[in-house]
Length: 126
Image (cartoon, rainbow, N blue to C red; front, side):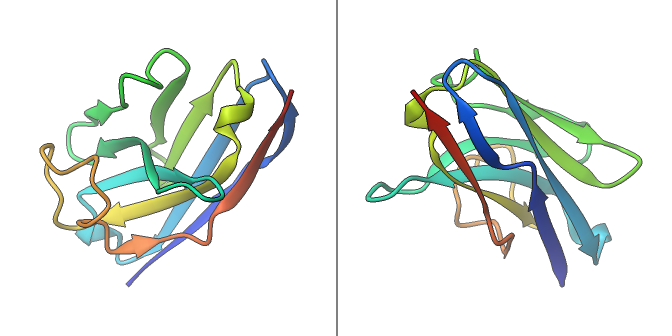
């Protein structure tokens, strides 16, 4: 099993920046990718970004790539998302996920991610 713990959420004002972190523990050797998803009230879960663990290739949707960046702390097995110029539309619960079977093709889809964190709330006030 893999355990994921998110941190860094909170309340910010529009235009601010925020960094979320996700610490993984457990059977780390099975992880091939980690990613971030978010879900706002009344909306479907949305892909925020992800990284293939081998090689470090990252994927961020075009709608967020100018403001959000995915990175990794190699020493702590932690995935991070740096969010800048936050907008009220970014308000959501942000979830970290890990997969042992995803590929670059499926990196942006939720189905291959077998392990999920509890989520951290990000609220952006305008």
